[in-house]
Length: 214
Image (cartoon, rainbow, N blue to C red):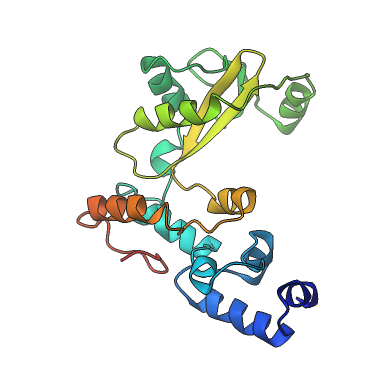
């Protein structure tokens, strides 16, 4: 807090007051997220700081921007083998599934990681990397394969075959975006799209507690 105050040229009390207002505001920004996501940085207006989201608010936002799910946001996408099948139907590049860690033996023929020891042995195998350029386009195409979802996060491998989609999640952690871009999720570029999505779902998804959008 002292470092942030010095960098901003303000008192620690100002930082403490600001972080308290943001924690109680629409973004429910925790003190940790206030610093980790960069909401404290010099040069931001208070409106820009208010655009950052904490975990409570982004879970509520994800709930509000997707179709109803009985067990919370993302549960409709929890069956990763079903996601894999839909990506295959959409013609999206994916890695080959080598093994599945699950309680029951998969009926689709993959190796079954039935115990922690089996999983550790599997993870001991080597892997690969490269190109990020095509990953964004692939993430958009993956979302298009699930048009009923409003907001998702994509898990993409950067491999020697180019970007490969493995799954999407209906309850993405917006802290990843905020920390990478040093911008709040509720920034001026995002808000029109987020409001349009909320308008799409407001008739079927009541506004969750802590959701920053009405």
